Length: 370
Image (cartoon, rainbow, N blue to C red; front, side, top):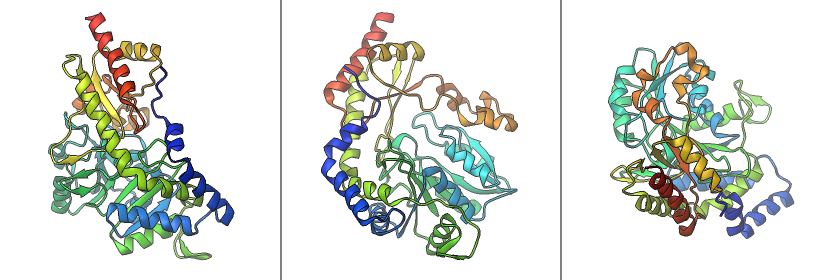
């Protein structure tokens, strides 16, 4: 039984009529940049998140960069973010001219440890970027309180948390702005690179839209120097076709995660994901901590089960950040987890039988090797 890590073809086949119609309609209109499909998606995604503005951009990485630049964050500034994330969270801070300052994760939920944030704040700190990792939100209310106390911008990285909630608050709606990735494998994914920004700030929305479009809201009227980062019409059409299914897909992911948790319970070599109280997680990824990870991965691969590791090396210990002179002791939780985490297959179309097969392989591995 071959089980892919993500099955995008199965998702396509489940809504083939909607996707084909969206693509053919865009081609028929011959509007490939801008146009009604982009406007429609921006409105629909903003409505789904419960905010005033959505700005479609080229990809999730650009979305963070655009927010930072539009807020005037740059040379001499510092931005606090989490040690365990994809590099786009931190590299955009550097690209804006600022310095990334890393904070360790909390042990249970993989998100930024709020108890360690204030000790990293200096006179140069301008913003905090928490990452709602693996589909579960950080304690955004407490992070917001810290930002207010020190007069800092709160920028939410929601690349893995489309419509996740914490205490009834949707991901991306607490801070000044929020970044989203619509990379194909995301819970809401395009058929290529794509990203978006949401905000309730009218002035910032206008500035970000301008910056992403060569510094102009009207063609040839360039008020500032910007970049070229636009969500193209075909991708917007695909996202618009998928958006009505997102809540159902998120619910099916949660159901799959709970089944995983049940079937992997009582295996002493495995720690399954915990769900934060008052949280509605969307399980973009299903990440477990295991003993003898490399041996387990070989066994899963032998059984034709595709897995991944998110992430094999924490950000502060990457060669890119050697200049910061960090050691594993600076981030004890993140550093200890990087050698034990593994992501098992997770997508809405994953069946109960497939999950039972995956967990049986895991259970047999530890039973035979104990």
